[in-house]
Image (cartoon, rainbow, N blue to C red):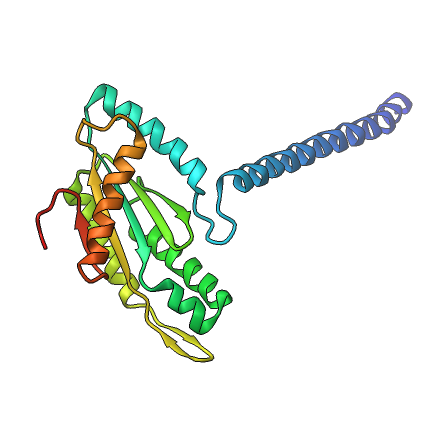
Length: 210
């Protein structure tokens, strides 16, 4: 019994120290993991919308572009979008209202897209989407879903109700693009056509619709 008691008395402090060490180590690792996640998000996410920032989005697009251009096994499309008359919103309701609209439309952009799509904030009131494994028809359908959902949104501000609309331009990788900027430029050209055509619509690069 003396030996037994001695063992018990000796064992519990050792177990307690060991358990404390394990807990402390796990806690430290958890904190380090959270810090890494925070730093990663800080470097790759837009602070207002939570979407990928343009720098990280382009890195992801470049990776997919290289994969598609070398293997040519699956399509790749991109959509550029721009909130219509956004300057008027800021001028009438203020920049805080503008930030609210940007953040809410960003949620629509994310939720309306497919799980495999990548959404980023391109700058100002512009967003960009990468449709992996999607041709221009599929991308255009998703873009139309985004347009429709944004059109249904309503924002009540002190100076009145704001009804947003959005224009989108879609382009598919055709094999003649030398870099991702060429593909983005095609989508931007389609976006320009949507703006010139009356806004609140989707245009596809190369589509002859007027």
